[in-house]
Image (spheres, helix red, strand yellow):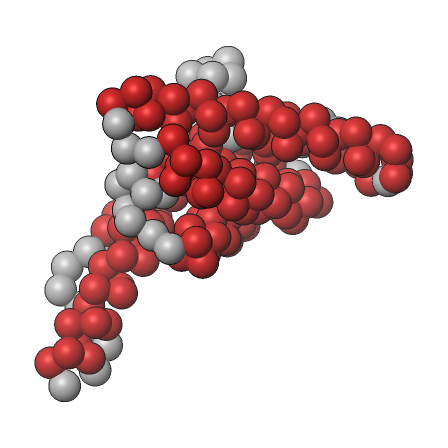
Length: 209
């Protein structure tokens, strides 16, 4: 039916837009906040496969908890001009409190786990994806509480998928047949650009029937 077709097209368009935003955030994030090209969180984690899953799990926890705690607070501060300036400060404050609570909990109750993930905790908590999702909820998108949590889970799931794809690509790019001028970061940028082009190919009118 026409309704079913329109619903499917809107669903595909929304998912493609989410993945495109995720690709940009996952790759560009922290390039300025860290120390320059080649040290973004995604590229750093992709170099060691054993770090991808624990970091993605931490990222998911912080993203979902930040969104869940900020959602009711958004209702309290309202939609005034002052509230728009308070929202970023509120989100950062919530993230900082969550980070401190997680550090204290892991240090006291799960010392072995804390030793394993201590270096990842700051990168996972104070991350553009975590803060960005909380910022766009009820600002760029009007979402219910389950929808906000689902958006956080979906973004982190997409980050995990993209990290694995990047790790696979970086392994295959480590090849002597690759020209010297393109080895390392240039080849990685080209690879991610091809992925972005492939995802953009789904941004047109798509019918699932």
